[in-house]
Image 1 (cartoon, helix red, strand yellow):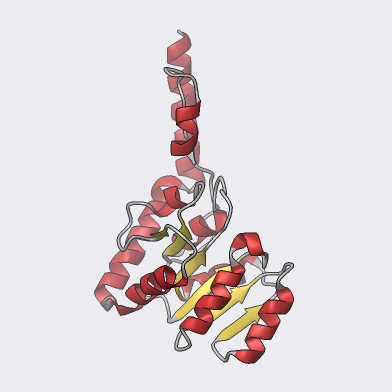
Image 2 (image 1 turned 30 degrees about the vertical axis):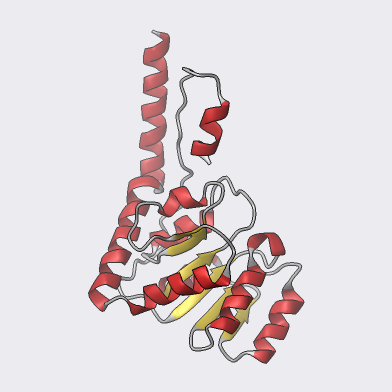
Length: 210
């Protein structure tokens, strides 16, 4: 999102970019599990229909869906038609983080330009890679991590290929990726990292005004 907005600003204007903070309530897992997770609103603009399409395309992968929304009936119908989809309408925050920790990957296929994807940062906090739509601020959360965790469009083939790649890497590569996800969270999204970034911005701003 920052890269999209910066060209619209007055040239030479000082700009600082600081990500949001996400509480460190997770328990990082280096192993993960064998499920594909989705946590969020069950609305079309969040990409839930893409998730259901992927579940049909990948019948050998378990899909764990958590949330409520306008597409609940579609999700309910999908659980009745496909044995690999499990839907839980509500979970408390600790349960959500535990579910994320035991997933191989969290899907964030948002169809709109989200300024920040909190659920993606929460996934990183427990070591789980988030596979995100490269729109708005989502891509900035995972860009630079191994295995190209951004997807450029809603084409199911692109998403299914990247999901399968994450399932087919070695156990050692999985553990390393999860370590790097956690390190990304610790470096950018913890409350302490957020506070340090804010202090640095204020210090820089004060130096500029003398």
